[in-house]
Image 1 (tube, helix red, strand yellow):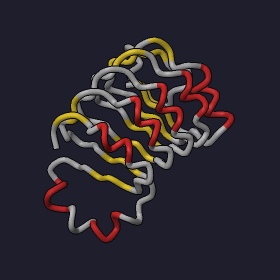
Image 2 (tube, one colour):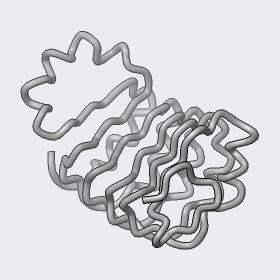
Image 3 (cartoon, one colour):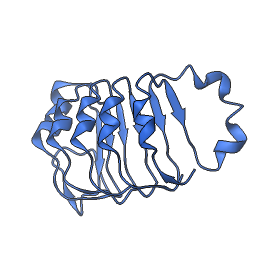
Length: 159
């Protein structure tokens, strides 16, 4: 798959799983068909699918989403604050995309987050204190970032 994430996908509010994994997509889709529906609320669009454009603000409509893996693509723009509406989100992988701007402090309201991967981006500024506090007040166990452009006082891994 190449191109932008279709905005129409954000209307699939009952989406259980969507897996787009680069070169494996054609050869493994039928193999994984049986387990496809066992995955819960996951959007995997990782490993160089050549997705372009931005994460749409309407991503906040996918309220059942638990895993968002859009790493290793060509997504630009900023992380939309509407992402914080995904209160059941457990993993947020946006690394290795040229996204920029600041990490939204609203992510600090996402108490289900366990892993945040922000390395390999053009994000700047400082990881907000609200996000760092998740490491002591919730299940957040791991944050990685590109610490040459993004200051992070609570990261487990700086690349």
